[in-house]
Image (cartoon, rainbow, N blue to C red; front, top):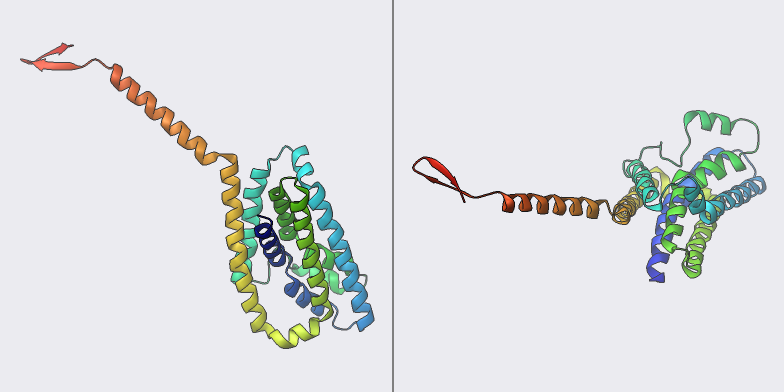
Length: 243
């Protein structure tokens, strides 16, 4: 149903993109910048990230086809990637897939425009978000309405990300570190469940279990057939007599 896809798409992209996490990183990187400049950086970062996510949404499946990677294989790989992201969020590790490494943070704090790097990528349009949007577009199966639902959920998450970045000071004062960690853990549990479902869908689509079950049945049939063809023998007076 379209409503189920809309809820699934919004929940997956909201957790994968992480508007609140992005706002916290944005606040740390722009602490000494005036508000008009912060607004500009936030708008540019969301715009660039939106273009990147849209490109993956529209052409991600074609890229996979060109690389001869099946969507089911990408579902399994993407599900594992999202599961790793969820584990990082649940245990409140600062080294999630959408966060910054130490070297990236040092480069971001240096002189220069940070809208594209690291805000647009990898903070907003990180590996988790890019993977999620390709998987969700795969669930749309080329249907225009379902594709628009996924794109609409993506745009809504980007809008929420922009709003969160604008009000990063308010979010930081309300949530503090403890509140942010609690929300991250709850979001991580949701993302873990969605990631496992992606893995299950990939395995089911690839018919790995069905193929294994079919091979087992064929081997069992061959074994039964061989037993039926084997001649029976009776032992009489210590002599084996074949019937």
